[in-house]
Length: 127
Image (cartoon, rainbow, N blue to C red; front, side):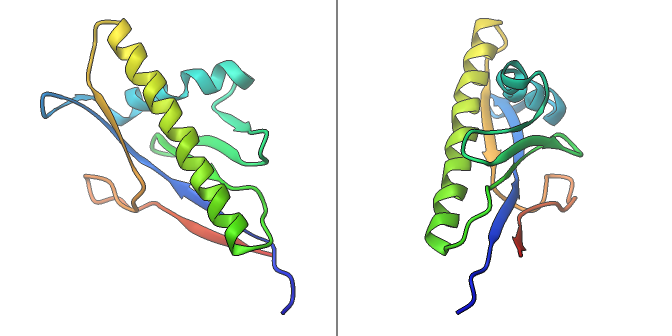
């Protein structure tokens, strides 16, 4: 079989709730999530040490694009690494909210539509 280079780009939906009610807009949530990212590279669009790209896409959706991979196992491993990166940002953002007296629970959704019915999502790339 011919060697193929592939990658996955995943957009995440975001929300913040407090006692079951929406607390912050998706744009505000994204700003809290990416405050640490901006401190890494002075931008909300950065390349990570593992070769992945992390940025805020149109509509305040965090997007994680894996590095180029040449096996399915490697691709899934990189995709899962992206989930961990976003989870770490979530924990940091929730702590920052608490420190500022705002509080609330941030949720990330690895899905393809938002609550308004707009579609975005995950797609594969091949070379």
